[in-house]
Image (cartoon, rainbow, N blue to C red):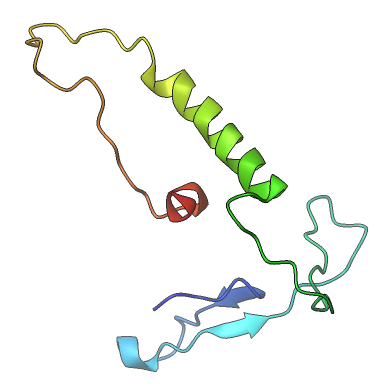
Length: 105
């Protein structure tokens, strides 16, 4: 199952039993500490009162689409034909990794 992005989770492997059902994740809260070099801090602590629904005409949606298009153009335009490939062979393959960009797509 997925682990929520609401802290750091650890598993304790030092117990006698290492059966999968005995491994229970322990959640550790994010800490707000300015001395940390890469501290993530606390964010989204409250929900906005007003609704901010996104539509196809929203500026944020248009900007995301533009940035994704630019990113894809760098990777898919002017791809050379691989050696020994015929003119009908695909030059590009798509792998959906499950990351944020793939989730958006």
